[in-house]
Length: 205
Image 1 (cartoon, rainbow, N blue to C red):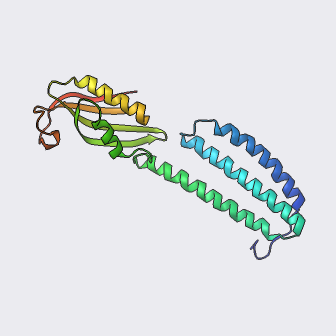
Image 2 (cartoon, one colour):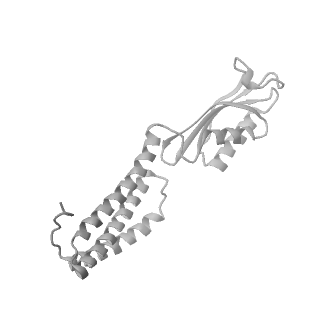
Image 3 (cartoon, rainbow, N blue to C red):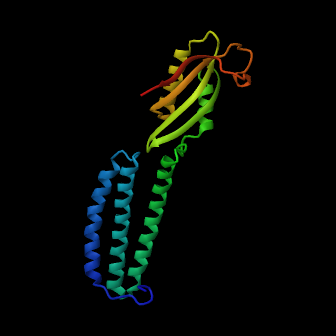
């Protein structure tokens, strides 16, 4: 309706108020940009303030266009642009919160990448039952069963894997079960039953 029959607005007042609002939001955006935005709560606040900033900028531009030309429809066009920016920001937040809700793997942490990295740790013969998920925003968790040699130091290898996950992938919590493979010549993945378990549920903080 505002596009078809645009109402008259006090364009100069609208432009001045929008500029003041933009200045306040610039200060807020600068403050929040220095915060830890791994948290969805902080990121949501940042996106909210950033979208408000865009809205004030669009409103200021619309106000001064109306003041200069008398074309009132630009006010409704600015509102539509603002709505589009809100939808874009909201989609990203819903997508990331959905990953946490569904305990899906983080977008930047693919299970196959972790599997390859664990296999490259010295002493690791095989890996299975590897899972990665997010219990809250910015807190990925990993669990896996790791096969080591019959005479290998399973504790040292587990600590090495744990340290690698922390240093390379920022995994703060991992639960690793290490098992001794009875015959080093036979791949662990070919074994039907469990080996000689060394550690169950080893976790790092």
